[in-house]
View (tube, one colour):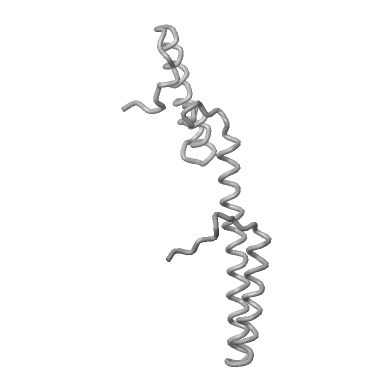
Length: 128
């Protein structure tokens, strides 16, 4: 008995419209049955929840855009080592010195593999 939306994903505008209609009903019910203090508290919670939904939707969209724009994906969908390094540096996981050291190591490994006639797509980013 799971909720099945028929595979339809709602746009941000539709989510806000549904949320505002439901919020109006809840606020009016609170005004009628509980009083103005409760209605004000519910209104504040609903406003905060709307901003939270907006923030989370934007964050999800930004993450998806970052994945799409990363490009450099091979046939298997894996990112190449340089792109992985760039993403880690952009996310703040690496300092500039660490990024440059790891990048130099990847470039050196790539050059050695090419000189040896090896396929460089299979090289991993980190030494194990």
